[in-house]
Image (tube, rainbow, N blue to C red; front, side):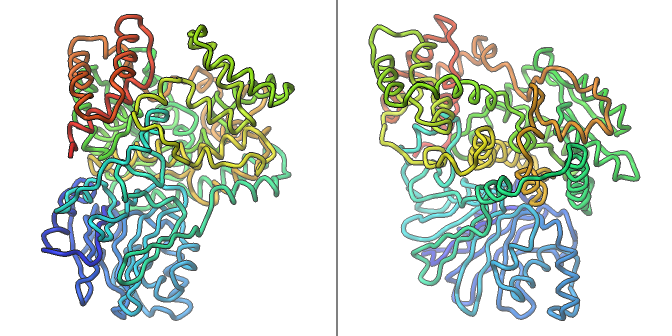
Length: 625
């Protein structure tokens, strides 16, 4: 796990600029740093290294191929690099490798097979910058699911890229204004979906994509080499026809293969254990593959309604792991809040970012790599919202759309209907299809669309999703989450929080083979009779007694609503929400912000947009232009 940065045709002192970019992401790679420039200094790479595989100098980056033609700076891990290395040796493409790093293998594969053919052979998580000295081409590549971040764009007309948005911001002369059109999406979702960023002319490279540009590095072309949507559509056209047991057998085999590859490292490895189905499955399979006790980690909270540590401890004891737990206080969690803006570098407001950071911090004291159970909900139908959308649509669909649309408009625009529940139902009634219903359900708070003064429509992955590509309704919703919510929220949260303490996280359920197999399963293998993640449970129950897992899910969350009513955080919040300050900024609607806050403090009406606004204002205080 590392951090990468670079630019093209940079005017001024390029060495000072790349060193500043590297220093800004020191947390992503505290072990070593390097810089490189092309012969004519038109292309410059920077790299910060967190040493995981091949801890010697032979693994240092930026790295140039044996022939001198290609140079790479790369963040991530290629889990099947040993197989790729053997293929290169067997075919005589390479006679020997200088070291044992996946970087060297990846670099020589690019030279031997080409960019697209190589990346299609790779399984892993990665953000890659590759330069061809012969053709003067620059490529940026991002992994299939979006585990590793990669920002790119133009600053004063010069092409730049980095793992950390903050590394772009430190460039001399950076003056890109805020991209206000994305704020409406932010105040609905609590994050900014790719390809957008908070700044104009700066973007996130989408998962599964290759960006290419040639001298003079002014125009980019982007193409996919893998698509989550295509994988889902193909999977549902070629459904798994075996029994439930056979599905569990195959899933177990694929997960074991993924976990075995992801446990490989030259540094200590452990796993998060939250006591849920997903992380328990990962830890159980890790322990079954390991000849020694797996290191597992969890945090607990004093509020019992948010605490799963006691269950995690029972599971760890049953599996025989070397378990470490840490109970955190309100004070521990609150102390993280001031650092969030710098940690995420753009507005981000999934409040579970706080416990994620704390468990990462504790875990880093014992290991350098931690496996995570993320992905199980989205791939195996784990969220209750999937059922609720199904249920609501089945009630609505018998009424012709023109009638529903008219009724929706009458309710939403009726000044006498002020009740939030009726307003929400009226809005949902206007959905043309289940996909639009799911999109609208994310906007169920009408005021979320009015927080930002800019109300210009901004197309994004949900609004552009075409219903009907997959026949099953719930698979459509799962796909929407895997395309946007999972990479732009969950994976962002885990990457930034863990890398803030230089901890590498790996996600076995996002292995290409596991993902593609999951899409071949009929929905009944995932959810039936109110039981979610059925096939995943069938795997887990081979290692952990069923009765140990049958309890309500508490999730990885904090009592933010309670805290904001206490003097310390309330004072912090009211400072950020000061009306005069918001009026001076000129970005948010002060009347709407004031109403949302007063409804909470005076009427006890909680809206998640409160946290979204606070995280935006905290970011503004940290990064104001």
